[in-house]
Image (cartoon, rainbow, N blue to C red; front, side, top):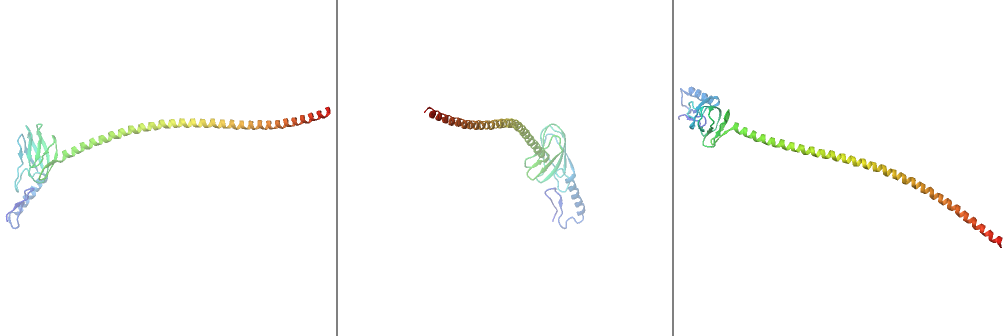
Amino acid sequence: MPSTYDPLLRLELQATGENATTWGSKTNNNLELIAAAIAGTAIVSVSNIDVSLTEANAATDQARAGILIFEGTLTGNVNIFVPDSTKTYATLRQTSGAFNITIKNTGTGAVLSSSGPDLIICTSATCVNLVATLAANISTLDVRVAAVSASVSALNVQVAAVSASVSALNVQVAAVSASVSALNVRVSDVSASVSALNVRVSDVSASVSALQVQVNAVSAAVSVINALNIRIIE
């Protein structure tokens, strides 16, 4: 049974009993290709024409490299086509020209930033620029933080206004309390005056009662005198 190749990195999968005298070199070749997939670089020249990265079974190619370095002068937007399989690419953009470089397979592509570096994650259906996604999320978060900060500032203004109102109310309450205290003092003074007046009225009443007794006594004496005068005249 002949060897086959894996669909992700196109490494040679040796069949049992095959390559009796060459399996060692084939294994070493696979290990080198794995190293290239992790840390190997591929230089990709760009201008204004779409580029499909080279693919090869069990041999060096561009699509397997872990790092893609783009060089050249861009005179138009360029698509870089990669295999329809899962793969992660670190990219460096060393180009001139204000045009886009897009990494893509059959799905939606991932646009490289103008300076880089970027980290492109491809599935079998699409490619995504992780760095750009994180940057967009951070920008959105910054907007939300700014909104929260503005809300907090507005709340602080409202709290300060409420605090000022409470302070003014406390001043008014203190003034009312002082007025009530002064009124209590006056009421106490009036109560004392009324009590003193009651005492005086009681004294006058007692004097009037004593005078009435004296008047009654005089009246009785007058009656006795009148009676005596009547008898004398008779």
